Length: 124
Image 1 (cartoon, rainbow, N blue to C red):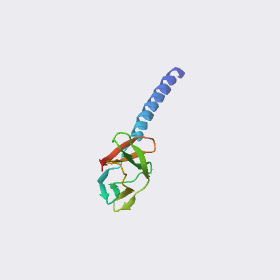
Image 2: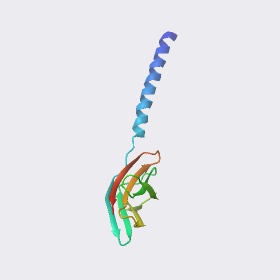
Image 3: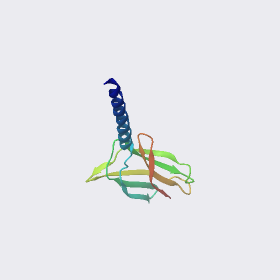
Image 4: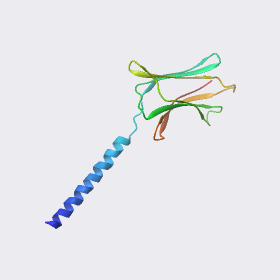
């Protein structure tokens, strides 16, 4: 009996490891909130960025980045939460326009685990 029991335990452990590995990858897949109605506007001496998202997960936040050359960006602001509006969230960022001839602005969606995606970019 003991010789048949060991292979059964080994097969069960192998099955358990495979199930754990596949379920771990399913949970680690990032689902980004849909971002839409993105607007970049110059209003007088200010630049206004506005956008909407379909939901607001606690592990996602936004960074506003600026650049003089469109290549080397630096963080100008962190937007942690939006305003609940009907069935979406509204976000807004307003800053004084830089004195540089042309400034690039972009919205970056960031997960707490460090992964990110660029939502939109525009220059003024």
